[in-house]
Image (cartoon, rainbow, N blue to C red; front, side):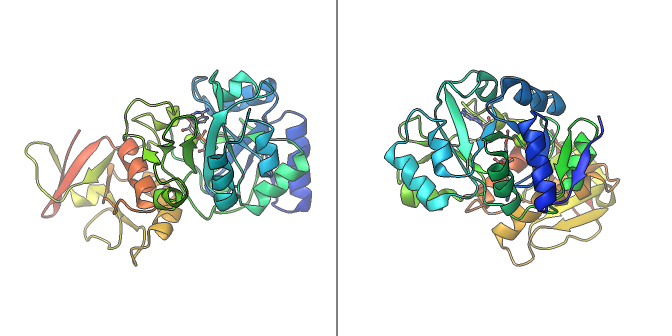
Length: 335
Ligand code: TXA
Ligand code: MG
């Protein structure tokens, strides 16, 4: 199929909405990453999203809504904690998991009795939701397990010819996926750290827990290996370890937090001022560039695990094949 590239204006959004109503697949920008959308209440439409992404059917998708009332129409009830979280953080990068109504098809939830819902803040996403007049199921618009797209060019690189259209909205401002919170468990739990900081959520739900990293969990997007770049990635450690493989720095791309290291084949600095919001916004784009830089591997500096740093480190650990340390002009890595 030919993938249409639509402008992010009134006409382009109207065309995208018409495609959604006709059960086609449309990628669109949200404030976090691009989503690959389809009519959430149509199994046939959502099946095409799974096919385009080569996503396994056991991985449920997030349903996007235009307002909290539309969310309430997908859940069996809206408990007070959900109401408070929506009041404070919607529209924005927060996804809430609650028991689903029967009208949500099982393909959306991978057969789970719950459905994950969020109201995005990106003006193009909101305009599309309103014009389509129905909830839109949308996982990130990448092939399953690969890097999330933060620009429409990334979407086209992975999905051109496999989807009906993309709304070309340019770079996405937050850059990392939404925080997924399950309110089905008591106390509530963060299934996936993301664009809404854990600390801010705790102000509303003081007993909110973080799911143990990379463990088996109710959220399949938290598979231990996920967000993998096309070349191996190793997380840098300050201290040396025994064994491993030694290569010249020039063969490595460095994903640096604040300062560029010398002698690497390519360097991407996430935030010279140490701003984790800026680092998150640049994170996937930097990995995409390092992937394409012709280096043998990526070595990544850890970032502080506070605020959006929790989400960045979550993605880095899932992307990593192992760990590395720097030894003079060389890098040593091990799986
Ligand atoms: O920011 C985002 O959340 C982006 C944009 C497009 O909205 N979407 C996104 O979707 O990242 P996806 O499909 O790549 O990740 C959805 C996450 C996965 O970890 C999935 O397992 C989890 O949400 N999820 C979806 N439904 C769930 C449910 N009913 N229970 C538990 N986890 C669920
Ligand atoms: Mg994804």
